[in-house]
Length: 252
Image (cartoon, rainbow, N blue to C red; front, side, top):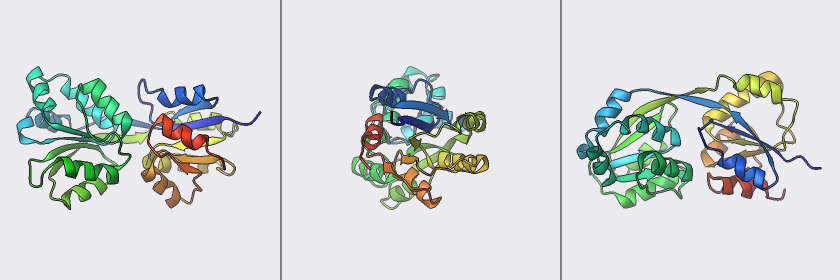
């Protein structure tokens, strides 16, 4: 029988079994390898921003982690603030981020069909006007400056606020040590930071990616892999379980 093992090198989002479930239903054997962990920071300035919706035109979320960071504070706010935010424009990259916004904040969002900053920026520009109040942009310490540059070039103001730090998952090395003799058919990378952290461990363990189909969840992750000289089998057309299955089922 052919090898159907798929390693998912992703952050261990609570309750996010969508990828594993979709792969299992299609006859693959998924192995979730928690790669990154997150710590919330700067909660006081974030609380101040969320308590002053009148000073902002909306919020940009580029990851479920940013949603989680905001949820920690948003859930403690007076319901009057919730109403005010429901009147604002909320933007999201990807289905997972959009779903987290709906589930945790009970807010509707725009842009879930986008897979990266380059795809979200035109949506934000179309939905907003130049020189309006800034958009709150809660992000991570490893956040790229691509989206801010694209917005600034079109005179869209924003307020970037680092609200979480990304670090290596404490069990990543030991998990990969246990798995290294079980060569998978596919390895899926979910973020540029995951690429950088995991490839360094692979090198230290003497683990080769030869004969393994390497998949990037999106264009940004693909760029990080190419930069490291890793041959990429495929890039998911959307950052979703359906997008991943599309690549896994693709012929050579």
